[in-house]
Length: 183
Length: 433
Image (cartoon, rainbow over all chains, first blue to last red; front, side, top):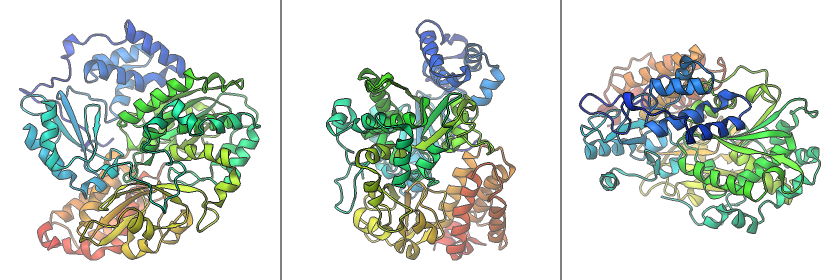
């Protein structure tokens, strides 16, 4: 991927991402229940590497992001090299390579939503959360706002994802109440 | 805004017949609506006959390419010497398209039934439903329906009690438009970067995990149970224009339109009626400027062209565009064509997998030139430069992402050239005055 709107910057100095655990204290993912879940996945795919994307999702669910240590653990579990795993992680925009705010907000600004006011929705999120620009995290470390390309819900302009919640038909006017719901 | 809307009398709801009915999401609710009768019927038919029935129906791929589904199935080896796989493309990420999301949210068992019939017909060991990572709700709904289907014996070692093994599972994507391209999707299932592969070999020979594979779109597979239930002749009869385009099609209408949403009409339906009657036309006081009829990757139609278009594969080609995925982006007279074309190009630049030079460089430079123009720094030669660049981006790469960026750019410059020319030597305020 050639970077751009989908790639959030690391939560900056003085605004550490609260959604991700610090690298030094990351627990291992594929132990106990995690190991059982991975084994069940491995049984479904004809080749071990098939379980790579789901295994990375497991790491991100556990840590809030995918750290170099997380990549190494996945590599070990699937008999791949850490470099190979990193190559895959960097291809897909939804895997966070840095800790992000507690609330990771993705606003679609591609054409169908754009003509319905999506850029105003981004502005409204920045204003309501105090984040300075798209791609940055708010000073309290809680909110990371990013512009993303098509979320596949163009008839419900503007769709917004707040972590795993998919919110439809967001307008600039409805943003403050939406943000307040999470505070 | 919002969905589901009440059915419009001009719609022909087949796939969307039970959208909005919460009960249809459950196994019992689906069976009550006649669900899984088609699977039971298909499992009692020879595999070849199932394929012949789908072939005879004229069903073509609803993901964008329009390839006849039954013909695609028939490319799979008849004698199975190694594992076969079925992939269901639920990566829905073509801007303007949001139909597969609704199918999965409202009628997950309809898709499971379609997958199961196809898996039986092509002798698939496993079916991978590749759902884009952002679709958290459809993934949850599909997962629950799959668990129910296994629990009720629809899927598993003895599917429907007919002694056939059918397995279906979800593979969640992680944010990459290109994974909707069939070979990129297969790489992604294999745990690789989603780079498209050079063809040949084609998936029916060497697909996912190197084995014979068939890949179909969600809407295509969801149409199959209806064809098995009601017969190919019925499906073939659903046709208002060219007999090569049969059945119904879900159109996702979005952009500056009064009632955005998914509407299902018979193939050959006039675009004008869909836009003005079914979808309520433009917002008050606005006039139509342009329509991108098949998802953002197809050439743009002017208002006059759009109002004269019949919505089927041939009808769109006759107007110099494509039916594509049926994601229809409506643009009214307030839309800045130059800015929105730049936004589209930005989408493709962001989503290029960067394997091919023409695409990696071409999409990025298209954006830079358009942004320069929007910033008032455009040169008189820029329009020809964009056209030349677009030509170098067409038909020269492993997949068609590069072509998809060129199509809206070229058609917009050809059809709305004065809007672009206004930007030359002018900032946005002057150009938009």
